[in-house]
Length: 208
Length: 217
Image (cartoon, rainbow over all chains, first blue to last red; front, side, top):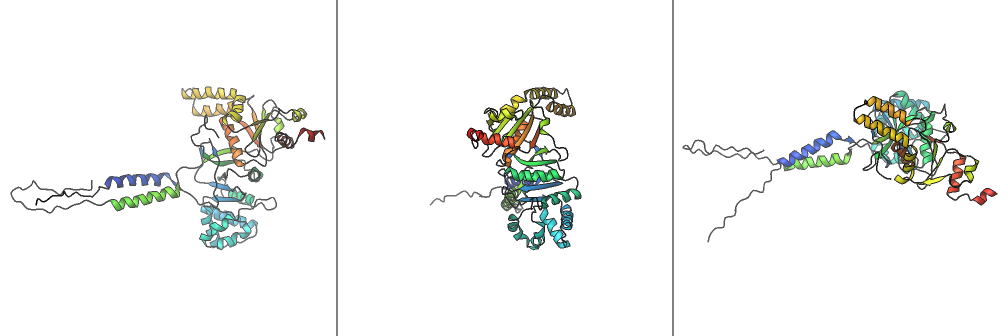
């Protein structure tokens, strides 16, 4: 019986090239991206043709949810800590160092609790805060406009701060107007509205 | 690449010392797996581009910009209503305009709506800007001059002054859309103004909430 010789073929695939590609991709992603900061509410910004980019540092962003809740975030931890102390002073609330530090950590993503509940909020474990935060928001009515205090003290602490409003596209106008008049009363007349880029749009074309 | 031939087969023909072939091939599959995981992680947890913004300057409270200051021939008032409806009128409201059904025009956010109207109204400034851009393309003027002159053109006499008045029913998206149109139409003078009773009345009438019979009463 003739022996049928089966050619031994190696199933080894050279992964080197593949590995090269993935490393390149990885470097690309690491270099070009910035981390998404968790936000308490999902906000879809309206599209516009504006192409100005927002700077990465010195930004005070104001998040406006369609229901009218307002949240804020500061990008510098030290600023946030000083702002909390100042706001606390204004409302006669003493914060411990630990609470201030906790706030500094949280403020880089988002904060927005009435100052009266701030102590209780900071006492919560970190993983529960996100859920609780959704139900709060910074009070902004005419009787107790805490939003104004926050903005004022934030500006005091860091005068170079740029104000950016990020509002949902279906936010009713009166809420936006309230934010705008509050800023106007503080003589903050220059601010940015965050929008997303309209797909395939430039100044000449692109419909709604 | 990762393979190194530790040959030496044709060397020393006479001796025939068998050298062990050491395979230096390294299996890269786990490396690729790990990289892919890292890539997916970065793709999900990061945002690639910074968000776009729109710069806006509001008038200060101390010196309220009186809307009546604007020449009535240059003034355009845009009223933002609910349900993505938008209206505009030229000039100022006077007593006749309440009775004139054609005073308030309904428009939309499409290219043929507001944009066409604004581009038409601002055509002189747009033509000037086009000329300026051409000059810049031919390197006749510097970047700084270009910016300076384009601001001058946008603010020149005869170019329209737009007042944006939003009703409470309108949304933020409507506001951004209109601000967008300002940018597209190169309008230099515009402001977001509080709505007045007269405007509100006109819109209500246009929406059919107030009929002529109500007026007679």
